[in-house]
Image (cartoon, rainbow, N blue to C red; front, side, top):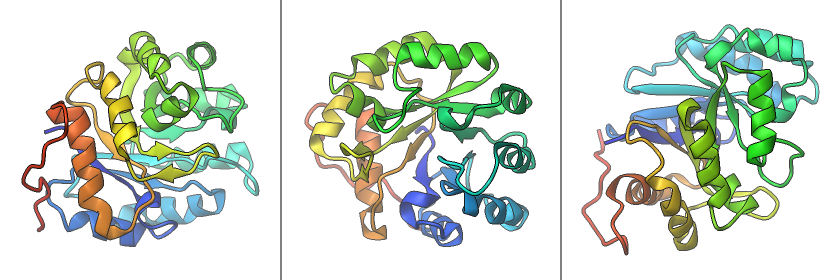
Length: 244
């Protein structure tokens, strides 16, 4: 089974310790993304990393701030460079203003496709321009963002065809008209299933649905149904999560 897990920001906004603990209740959740979506969260999370117990996870990534309001780009990049070299660092394209700051990351830098709130990174052409500037960067496909931009998922498939060799992980949630991250509904499952065959089985799935802890099993089941089982109709099966 591929690594599946949650963004800490989705499970417990700003409280990464609680989010790690919630995931730790399930031994089958083997992926996690540490999230510092707001720039004031970045330094405390980077400082805490050496003290975090992440041994139960096979895959760990880090989400950089989505906007830089009170922190300059150079400070953010320098903080992110302190993270373990094995961790992909997921970034939104619009913070990548000074290319020289980000080429230092090489393949650690993982560029995410965007939704309609942004002005770049939404289409194949916009991503192509970014990867020309950052040729070693890898790719995080956000299927929820892709669905919001193009509900047919044709754009997502084209992204995978062109940038599939860069694919490092997938973000999964339903995304609203204003960029809200929701639980994965039936229509989202149908849409995401159109790209499943193009995603390698070893590729980690990071769930970004903003949910209460009681909905963890539902979201993991949805991710597994789409990307691993690939069975029509999503028949009821025994729970896939194994509490510790």
